[in-house]
Length: 439
Ligand code: GDP
Ligand code: MG
Image (cartoon, rainbow, N blue to C red):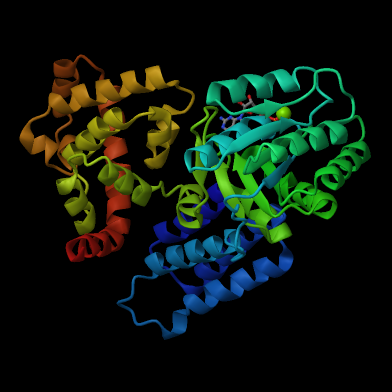
């Protein structure tokens, strides 16, 4: 979905004559992509109107940057789509908050419930886990292992075949022990869909959760609407967690699920490890989905780590991104780790690193830094065009750094992507720089 929308926008923005007809075509293409992703027809038509209102060609003075305006309109509308403006569940201190997980087998429930228990644990809630998956052999073992690693108390049964009973027992036990966050994991698979939904209802009745969370795999794509609707009708969940956002999924599924159920996404899973859980934020989510990279997230992350990034910040604010900026960022990223996550925040780098594990990725980054270190100052502070004008420079740099010309080219195309981004984000950077000055 994101790819298609992005393609529509860049097709248009690449074309020299940005006329009304081309614009209409783009809006239509975006709407078709959304419809195909099972986004509600009414929402799509609202989106269409809204984009058209924002970018009213006839009334625009010629000096206005129309491409920028369209991109911003699409972005804003998609943000509105994933932001249902409903207040998400907030657990209360000093009382038991029972949270039940639902979702299909393999969506990431067991992994995520440990992540969430740990999240609340580190925020001062006494947290525990209950395994009500009696369907799959090994389900309790998996939860036990995760919980032990995270030092979270757990409850389950190796022999019971009655998930509602196990859930009720576990919840009662932990309530008595004054736990504040009690997370109940469920199965998600049955021979018949009806059996699964019956089981969900039975567990819900047995434990009356304060909050039911649906876990949705980001790669689910077009089935997202039907699936989330079916779960909503049966289990009436109040929040959604999207898992596996670290993969190559476009995020269209998430949009459809929110649109179909008017339920807020509260967290996203960003990896297999216990710490890979983040609060959902509409804006970075959409910019990543549109392939814009999470430039703002990256900048904030760098700021938080107090790494040296003044020059790069200043450059981005000016809409510039030199080879040296790329080198500094690579160096910073290597300090920040885990690499795979950081790479995902940088436009283009994600694709380049696709399929590599952290070790391979970090080797690749090291080689990129070697390449930079074989460049002259003039080359480093350039926008990269100098290499196109004098290709012999590439050969020299490749030889000097013990890499290949292909790798040098790759690095330069990466820098070019970043430079393009910086140009687009120039306005934002300026605002951020201004905000910083005022602080
Ligand atoms: P369940 O059947 O719903 O309980 O799903 P599991 O928790 O067993 O997860 C299924 C698979 O997805 C496991 O291999 C997990 O490691 C993996 N997984 C879960 N969440 C994420 C995530 O956010 N990112 C990635 N990459 N993998 C995940
Ligand atoms: Mg499970």
